Length: 322
Image (cartoon, rainbow, N blue to C red):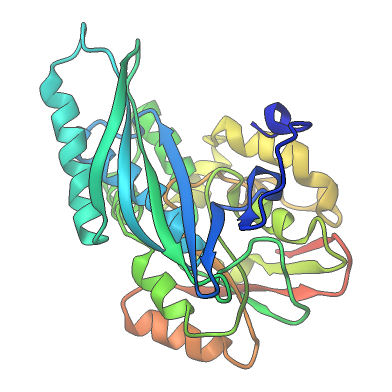
């Protein structure tokens, strides 16, 4: 999509704060000094067998981009590709039921959608909401000294790959599924009360890929401590067996130039740090004087959270401590 959009020219709109040229999690259109419209969309093929669960995951994943901007989702429209000549329409109804379950939890109204007949199932949502433009989170405005807090363990991409291979443990699958159907709603609400310099959600680029996004156009860098990062069950075991999604290798190939001593690092651990996540957690750069308080409040709300790194003065470099 970046290559398709590059070079496109559209007129300047004074109220358009963020568009496709910013590589942010959502587009932002300002309505007044304290209110802006935030819009995003996401859809993908099933990553689990159960249609209802797939609908839940898809909804959480789409809503997450609104939360990653510090916004509040309000309405959603479904995006459906479905082989109605091969599959029972009841399957689509189950997907929609799962998505609606999470939209209701998010207090977001389903207002419609669009469907096409396709050879394979794909499902997702276009989501609109509101954000205060003075308080929204950006994914490209790091601040020296800030600490990074991540709100979900890593490894869902690896576990989904092992699941497709047919021998993922029940413990690992249950943990990954439970995480993917968890909204980032409460984490975003809590974070909005703190001094956040930058924020995003961890999805297709993996943790290190999204960290690269944060610093690549700045004069700052990042230090990541692998020992502090929480993982889903058996992720290291599966990664050591080479059961890693192709997306992780693609992420490494395009972003390894930002990683200090890349060739000397444990490649299995790098695979995990580049593992593409579905409905991943929020990554929050927070004032170091407030990091402990934010972490405590997240944990008190039963949100998995941990400090995983900090912003440094080493321009466009990421130091990974293993």
